[in-house]
Length: 414
Image (cartoon, rainbow, N blue to C red):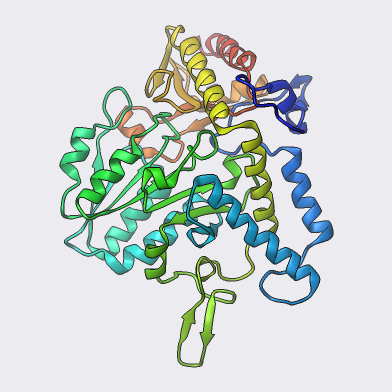
């Protein structure tokens, strides 16, 4: 399907490419509002992966036969397409991983264990996902480095004055989430990167909630490293991306070893292959790379600016609808440019897990829990929250159904 470049997204036409959205349980059509966890996958992505398995399935970089050559070309071109999508300099800067979490661990083990020491500080934010927080916390325990956290203020935004105090000449790396998966906050990642570079530190940005729904230019942000996941951007599970500046990646040693990433092996030693292959040992996610390539094509055919606008408008609408409910507490900034496409909230007197179960009775898929941000929830003073997160195929009508379902919870827990 060709998406017309118009001001408004044709949501109904887009929804036709997602058969799963037509599913019904107990006569009620699915309302899928759990996109911050995983988005649904459109037919063109599924078709691309099926075509690969039916026509070109072979291992890459292993054989000279036709099928291996086709698979290798598809896998390599996928790197090129992703590099273009985020404005990296080339495939050498695009490492395919399993997900954002593996990208963070790759950096932490390859760079962190080698470079951090007791005199160094790792600066995070209080809204970090466990993928970042736990990883750097554990690396710091091994290396003796200390970890500091940029405060989140009462509006759900980062206290940038505090950031300027924390980031100093002892800072080795600043690791920050681009868009909070709990608060929805869109952080000033370019400003954080500038602060890091002013003190000779590196910057890592967790873009899992940003790349799927807004234009991301890693060159403009000037991040040294940036990671994201395919399954949150209409792509398949099992593939993620770690972007890194080429000169930095060339200096890093891999932390996973095996076939496909070596230049020469003897019984005594080994040397590594070229970028990005030296960080991609073993049989890589070939079909998933084909799917990610198709997902990027699909997203750009719609237009990332338009996707961002659609999500902002839905989040603002959901925020306004929920804010009008006197017994609902919302976390994070008001709807607008400072908020990505999600809203976390609690209904007074109802635990988030109970509320989510009631939503499921209405075939509304939302998520409850701490969203892998336990320390942030501790700071908010709540054990859990309910999160509704939106994507390009969601509608205002679905938000209305979410708000209407609150009445059932009130009646049950009155």
